Image (cartoon, rainbow, N blue to C red; front, side, top):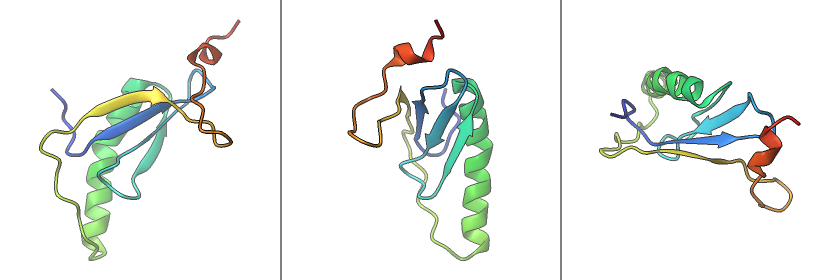
Length: 92
């Protein structure tokens, strides 16, 4: 069971132990982790902190997603939007 209140996108990078993550449901929420599991753990607590910060600053809080999803994908290249080859994650 997904224990997140918002959807999460995790992106693999060219480094085997570096992942970025963000929530398309929660504007401004981003983070990094050293594994997919690390990203999910950090996102679970980070989303709560982010929502608390929004409330403390009187900013609008998006409604919770009733069906949140976790998507794991390759990071897109900034220059041409071509997905990064996962084989680059394997050190030869």
